[in-house]
Image (tube, rainbow, N blue to C red; front, top):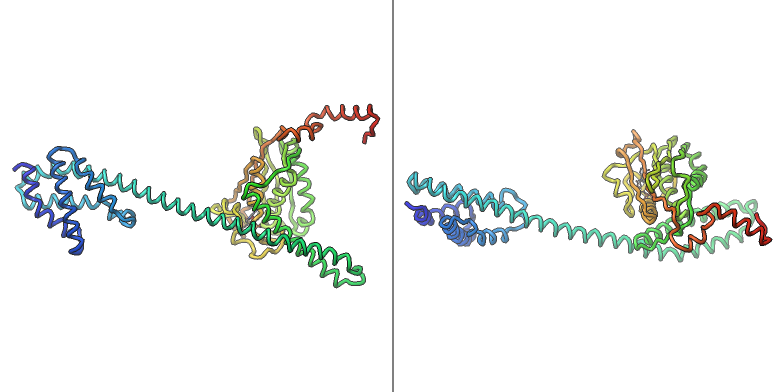
Length: 424
Ligand code: ADP
């Protein structure tokens, strides 16, 4: 028997067998039979012409009708279903045709089915990728909305807190002036000190919120001037002398190539960034620990490292700590002080530090084997800063002419003497 005839003769048995095996429920089966009929029409055409692409329209329709859960379930994928249909086709052929006719038919339909596996697998993968990227876009939009809400909250809260805080600061300063001397009224002096300490901490938090808000909105403007890292580090060392003594910690600052080179930067902001990282190193290192600042000179850059012998940070949190409110579970929940062991803060210090470093064209990242309060694996922060030898604008060039061209300093002095000006 010719293959075309065999195929045609098998249609009723094939339809009944495939629909009963693969479709559950009468209603589903009826519409499935329609689809199978269409499939069989195209299968006959494909076998007759030798072109399996005849099946494309019906396969396209099947792929488009797939639900997401079907796409995610490997057992319900179209290539798997088509494989069942192929096996049922072989079964029907073996049961209803002579052996040689069955073999001829199997040989003819096999390449067509092989084509359908590849075709549907490709289409399903494409559809799945489209679905996943759509989901990802949705998640990204949600995250962006969330980040925007955080930014808006910070900006509004900072603004709303600023005015009453300024009032408290003003009135407490007036109150301080009115107070009798410490000897006459020791109680009132202690209370006044309490108010001062509280308002100072609140001012720091509000200032941090304002900084984060400026960084978020790209409004952080830098006041460029000549900066020397060794000097900033000396100031940092001085700033923490008392605290280091209290916590029985040492801060070692090792001289490194490039640390005494002049670079243009915002010294106040860079000091703020350094202070944040060093105060974290103190906070998250137990009493008796060691903090080492070192670095190296790279072409056009200087890389500073601040390493501590503290509790460490899990690798999965290395990005999170630079996000707003990215404080980890290891910090105490309330803001218990800037340098107490594990004394939590609002989680704004590192986002600000990152904003400042990046505004200078640099980068900051962290290295730590993980969080372990018993073993204390330590944490190392890396700060990469570009060495900016040229002034950022004409105004700075004029203003810092003498620093940029040391010979000029002498000429200016001579000029002053000649003009009868005093030279100090
Ligand atoms: P916080 O105000 O909480 O200190 P930061 O933004 O400065 O906020 O730091 C975010 C979080 O990163 C901290 O809550 C802490 O969990 C973690 N962290 C920062 N520096 C260190 C460090 N040197 N060692 C261990 N954990 C650290």
